[in-house]
Figure 1 (cartoon, helix red, strand yellow):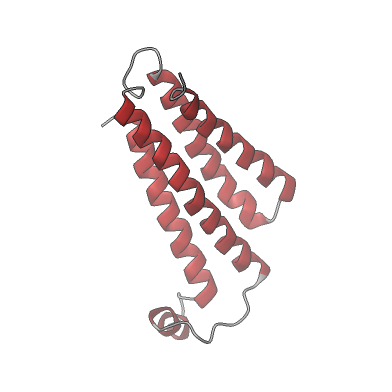
Figure 2 (cartoon, rainbow, N blue to C red; figure 1 turned 45 degrees about the vertical axis):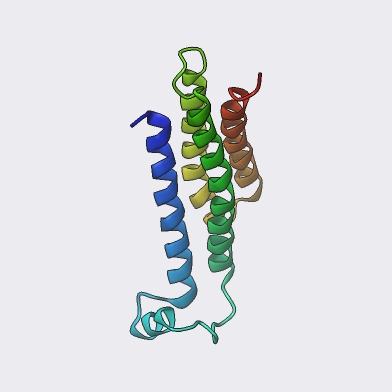
Length: 137
């Protein structure tokens, strides 16, 4: 498996982890009452705390960006640019930039650090753009 595909798998696991943590924070799933709520329909959830709302938004943002990342990496593989000698290093570098920026994004978003969060998000877009640049003629 190529490095970019491994990073896609890792990004998928990161997305799942972010979604689970946000859900557990929302339901207090580490308590017996919260666990029952988590296994239920979640019709009667309390309003989320600011940190819980940030965790939920961060997870949803990651899910949205994972779709873009997956589409670019898989298109690079289908088109041969992920394995071509001239473009493969850019695909791998873009995948690394995207993945590690997203790893950094999560705790910064949870901490509520606004401008740094946006800067890290922009760095992840640079990773996506680098991969996309290999797909253009």
